[in-house]
Length: 483
Image 1 (cartoon, rainbow, N blue to C red):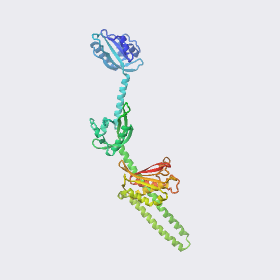
Image 2 (cartoon, one colour):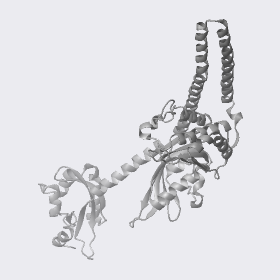
Image 3 (cartoon, rainbow, N blue to C red):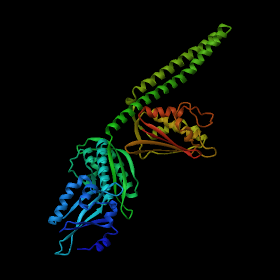
Image 4 (cartoon, helix red, strand yellow):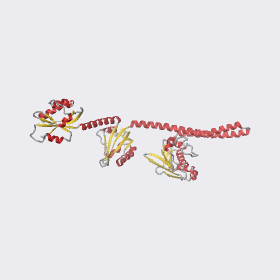
């Protein structure tokens, strides 16, 4: 058996206290470190009973006595985790176990070690507590975890993810079939974000559409971050899925309703503007003729004026007829759509603006190879191109030949048209919020009326599309239309 000097030497640097127990007399001697921990109390002679009643937490007293008697009477191993009250009055965790002797035939003494495990125990409780909160939070928010192994391409899900995807708890995703749980129109997007994260360490947070084991499509919000090894190599991607299908569906329905209302309001304002402009000149002419009739001094002058009244009446009737035609066309947009070639629409616009193009020596470059035609209203497409091209020429940079680049393409299943120029540009920080408003102008140009872009946006949105702009002052502007 080790003597006291040897024990103290071994345990000195390990924050380990001990008891030395005489198995014949049951006498207990505490190590100096044990005395130090509990404050060197006056035990009254019976160290064991004092320990049970004053040092050991009451929850462990019965079991400790049983283990102690098994050790001292039957030499059974002693192992237990207990809480001791130290000198400062606070309880700390210790692992209590007997030190086995390698010297055979010496069974007259036993050593009981007290190893401080308080920090480890706190960490254990913290982990358990955090895991509890994680599990409950994940369940309440329908948020599941996942891991993607870059090398093996294996995918791992936690139970909440399996529940979200309507998979049994023993289901293991096939590495070769990982995309089957994503909606078909989102495959390209998912492959792109996984590639950028696994190759370049670019994290992501986005909304995507997934598919359950039973092929039910739904929306999730997913977050992913790269996982590195000790050599700072990316070995995996760790992330979460959150089921937001109900929220997203309500959001899309609301946005769709708002878009419909906004589109209807835009068309209403557009129509009201057209009405006011179409009728204003006729009403002004009628007012002028009425005034002249009142001032006429003879019958001949009045008869001449009445001829003008007849002309104004015919023009007014024609204007009203055209406005009625606009209303009819608005109510039959879907029936009016037809296949329109971009090249044909552009040729019509160039022909109608040939004098302006020649006068300003403008160059128009068009690339329609990626998308040469769409189902659209030809008059609308021609009007859109006309407004954007004439604006590009009208607001050219002084001393610079105007160059207009027009291209069409497909992206993520959507059709796009871009019209770019090298003109004056627009300060979007100052004017971006009123870019497509009625009567909004951004340059001191004598021909600027603030109507063209307003009409263009309404024409685009009338058919369910959208228009956006990027611009740099003195460099140029690009309009991007999604059909």
